[in-house]
Figure 1 (cartoon, rainbow, N blue to C red):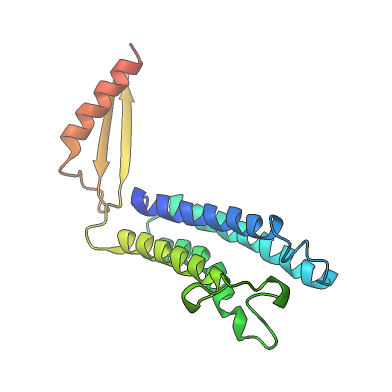
Figure 2 (tube, one colour):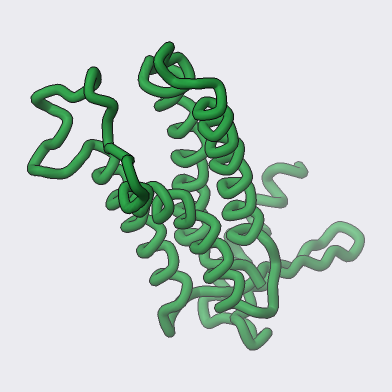
Length: 186
């Protein structure tokens, strides 16, 4: 079965925001990779972090869109991969001699409402990941699959629930699907 579509979309948006956002934040500013004051080894670790952001995003999308018989583990894996980057970024300040910004980049707008700018991204993305997880794990979540069968010139489509039983809304879905299929193939 597949995770509910709403959760898959939210996990995918989160993964895209992570993979693309991290790259843009570092490559379109002079605070990290292009900071002349940073030694090469610090830039190495920035590269490592950027590569990790892409891999975590890919893994989150993989688990969000794969077919599975283990719903909870799939949600936990998608959420875990999606959230790891944001959690590690939030906790990085706990290490000795770290700062949210290098001194030359601190401005009057660096700490809106007392939080560093990146905290808002962390909160936002973790909220999206939490919502995607909740939508997939709630009792009335629509895990299921669409099964198709074709025989000569006819096609049958059926929605099934997590137990493999036909869903109540099957008939309108079946009629709509067959109507669209026949229209395309005329």
